[in-house]
Length: 369
Image (cartoon, rainbow, N blue to C red):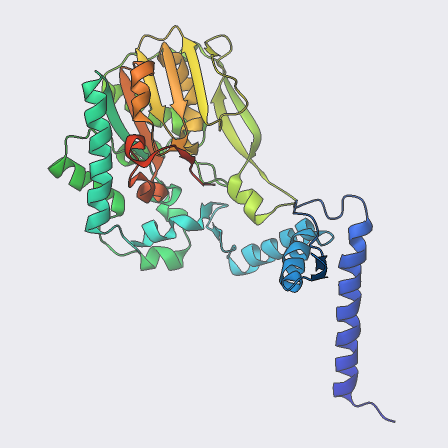
């Protein structure tokens, strides 16, 4: 019996498909081959004495995270898409000159899905509640949003997004206008100072969604100058250039072969001490003491403030950093802070709705990259 070309092609495709499935399945037996992404235990076919109805979907999800050499395959695919097509994945936007951007900032950048008037009012009410409580307890509250990277560096966004960006106010513009017109909440717009400083030095990591050590120091300086508070002499502190920063966006795009970012950081040896059990700068609660002359600080913050922690710690004689939302402003009963800073990433402005912990109850961790 003769085989036509179509039949041969179908046969070869089936053989190739079977071989690939066998390779990625059997390859899981190789030590370390499937360890790039940790997953749950393999789903059971039989549960409670019967065949599980969801076994097929559960196994597909489990296998998609555990198949052999997954990290390298994802890296290869991501490199192909980035280098040939200039695209990333559903979480990462590949920009120009090596810049990566968090896809969750696209709405803000494109002015899509803007805050409604009701949402603006709810945010303003929550911040006003925090401000009033701080004032009652003798503290000065400052609201400091951290701009998205593509707000400060729009020029490296893909051209298709730059061309689509409408000339309308951003949510941050609208929120500042609302706060200024209808509340007494004190706020600081970091965008002008960061934009002015970026010509002399890179302020955000190319492969991370956050500002780098230099950008964080620029933001810190702007905060202290706005508050009129004394700052330590940073010229006597050692500055170290490192090339070991592992970008959060890089991990999302290249899980097996992360490229490291350069950074410049200050060394604070002996300048302050932790008075809480410290693990990482992302701990939910961090407390510090130092010889700083700026008074005492209560800082509600997210991951952006991690790079500012050292600067703030050596400036205030006592500081407490809280990473849970809603914000426990009633901590002022025990912290007795002179200054309260509310720092949040621009992309998370909606999280401020109901952010007064006295109303919403116990704080929960803000989900972010």
